[in-house]
Image 1 (spheres, rainbow, N blue to C red):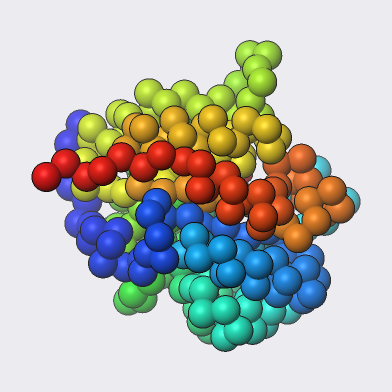
Image 2 (cartoon, rainbow, N blue to C red):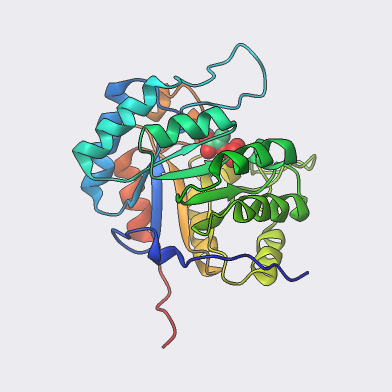
Length: 266
Ligand code: PEP
Ligand code: MN
């Protein structure tokens, strides 16, 4: 399968603070204080290029925290104004896209559950027509590369050329030390189909725990992935979502400084 995606190189739409690209921030925006304090510490590391925060959260069961909603966009705006970090949020509906664009969010990402649903992806794509904004597409929850490719094509067909993929692992029945199986071969296949597509690794959702994140991060860089999205929280022990896998900004700084980055071939 040859993919004819029309893509601009990552370096033309993300201003790298340092190598490799690090996108970090809380799984969920919880309070203004939590988001701002996390953002300031992340910015101070000098290693983070983009601030992420979930505003609308796709929860498996009802009754759990489903995201702070639109007010969180105001907090992100303030975090960006105070730190200079561009911001990224997950969008799952046309309304999310409209609100995120109106609030000046810099990068949108499509979550794993949304990528698995072509109706949802098409709704997002339609809302993006005529808009120039970077979009990152996570792999679907299930190990189906066609769904991942199909989602990338739908977004690209809507005119989005600042496009990348996020590898966050796949659901599996197998007993595993990972929350989501990396199944690296699927990311490799995607790269083979479309070599110019930037692929960013999300070790947080692959691992599901802090301890394994350095190992998966290094492996992703060794496989020439173009960056990492790592969840961080001012106090992970009290995080409202994904507490076990978030790291403090200080731990993030240490983790990133221990990664070895391959020199580009000349
Ligand atoms: C997230 O990034 O917080 C998230 C919900 O991720 P995923 O869509 O990969 O489960
Ligand atoms: Mn999360």
